[in-house]
Amino acid sequence: MSDSAPDQDAARADAFTAARPRLIRLAYRMLGSLTEAEDIVQEAYIRWHHREPAGIREPAAFLSRIVTNLCLDQLKSARVKRESYVGPWLPEPIVDPLAEDGGDDITVTLMLALERLSPLERAAFLLHDVFGVGFDEIAMSLKRDPAACRQLARRARAHVQAARPRFPVSPERGRDLAEAFLNASIKGDMQGLQALLAEDVVLYGDGGGKVAATFNPIFGPAKVSRFFQGLSRKKGYGPTIVLRRCVIDGLPGFVTIDGRGLLQTTALAIDAGRIKAIYTVRNPDKLRHVAEGLPPFAS
Image (cartoon, rainbow, N blue to C red; front, side):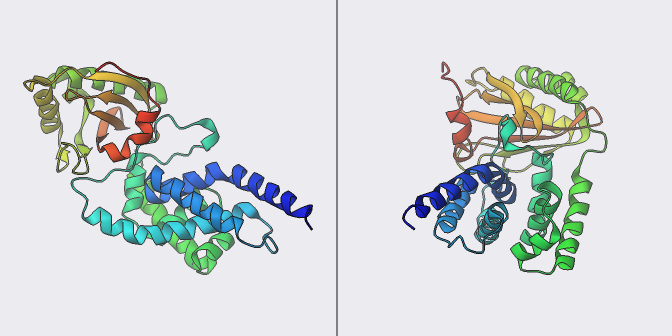
C-alpha cells in the first residue's frame, strides 16, 4: 500500500494538470473573472485531492462538476457585488489567449449576454454548447434531470444567438478596423471616427470606482466621437502609449497607457464592417494579469 499511494497521488496530479486549462476556461466563462476562476480551480484541486479515488471513473468530468458547483455558489455573492458595482461592469480582459487554452467563440459581447441569464442557464449552455458535455453529465452537475438541463441550454442559446454579430468580419478586417479606430481616437478625428462607428454603437468604460471612467454607457456615433475628441484636447492630458495590438476575449483590440499614465484595454465588437461596441477596462484590479505580461515602458 505504501508503494501504491505515491502512484495514486502522481496519477491524480497528472489528471488535474491535464484538466486545468479547461477548468480555468469554464470558471472564467461562468464568473467573468480570471482571478476568481483561478481560486475556484485551486479549491477544486483541494477537494479532489482529499476525495477517495474509488468510484471516480472519469476525473475530468468529476473535476468539472466540482468547478461548476463552486461557480454556482460564487455567483450568488457575485450578483450582489455587481448590483453595487460603480459604473458598467465588464469581465476581466483576457489578452491573446494561448492556443493550449482551447479557445472558443465566446466574446466580451456574448459574456455580457451570459450575465443576463440565470446561473443554471449559463452553466447548462457553457457545459453543453461550449465544452461539449452531454446532458446526462450536466444533469449530475446541476442536480436537475436531463430534460430540464436541455431546456435551460435552449433558453440560454436563444439569448446568446441574439447577441452574435449578424455579419461578422474576418480577423484581418477586424485588425484593420481596430487600427483605424486607434489612430482616429488618439487624434480626436471626429470625421474619421464616425465613419467607423455603427449607428447604434455604444461605449462602455469599466473603472470600478477605482479610476476615472464613463459612469454610464455612451450611445451613438456623434456622442462617442465627441468623447474621444474631448480626451485628445484635454489640457495636461499626455499622449497615448500603445503597448500591444491584440485579441481581447475574441475581439480585436489594444492595450494602452492613457494620457494620465493609466493602463487600459480596449476591445471592439464589429458587425457588418462597423464598430458596434467599444469595451474599455480601466479598473486596475482587473488588469493585474495584463500588466504582469507586459514589458517595461517609459512613462
